[in-house]
Image (tube, rainbow, N blue to C red; front, top):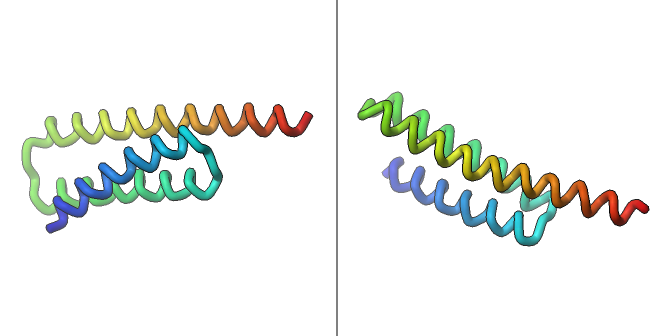
Length: 88
């Protein structure tokens, strides 16, 4: 059951991160952070409670964190640029 929850949180996290990139907002960005942390936390819990192939697990986790972080950083850059344009 926890693995299904973990996968759903991860999928929703990617969708939310993409939506935030398309239409940035501070609230959506906070939700994206929460989902990213929840995914990493549930993945860590799964790894501790049922150790499997740690290399594969860590590789997939690293790819997830890299992808979502890249989108989040790009969103921050867009929001900062937008704030500067509107401040002038």
